[in-house]
Length: 101
Image (cartoon, rainbow, N blue to C red; front, side, top):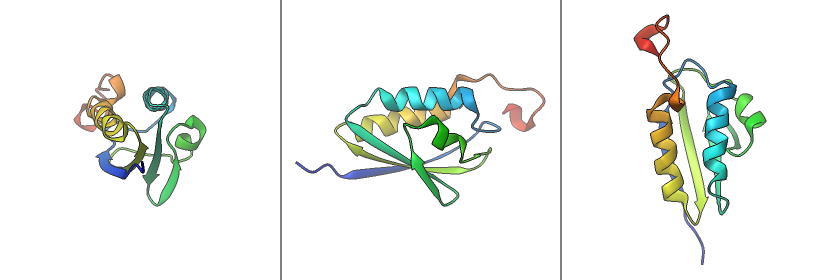
């Protein structure tokens, strides 16, 4: 049975995608071993299970992430990933930045 590729766009609300949120990101993706995730930001596409690849994106607040999932739990992974972006990767707001994030 062929699985369709699903896509979702999310916006980074944190200042940057640094090591700690990347760890949260990769740990979530790895909970879905039968689903592949690619991440496209500013025309660059990387493997969502690779922390090093995600670091190379140098993503900043306002960047749009195109998440492409393929596999048995693609929709569930995208839903959980959207929620993780929504809660700012469990980071507390920094009062020195605009809008608290």
